[in-house]
Figure 1 (cartoon, one colour):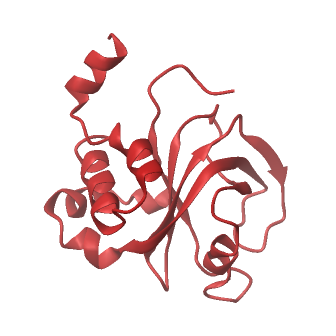
Figure 2 (figure 1 turned 90 degrees about the vertical axis):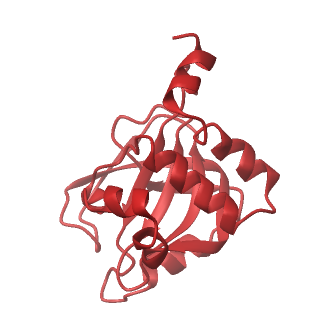
Length: 171
């Protein structure tokens, strides 16, 4: 069930390597059919409808996909081969968009707004992306991947300023 509030743009950091295989997690992600992703990590408080940005760290350091969470986070008990956590929270995502032209760490560092956001270390679990970084990241994804109208529709809500988003929601 989707929440009624405006959706959040959620930065979802993942380790690219686990189990001693540096690119395995990214390869697992890319092996899903575009359109649907099942049981992937999400925030514990997820209730559905938020837009997730799937980031993979070393050695690839890239934003590889965008997905919409379908519902409430489900707990899964470890042990896991990629984290020491005893429990993780997972969601299903639909639609899932694999980015043909991923956003790289070099892209982030070359953008003043995103570079400042990156200094806050979002890859260490800081999930929700606030404006202006949310708008700039959505814009960069669409600039690099312009052919998907569905992706443009999902990310377009983050291109507007916070003031205009509040006006649209009736706040």
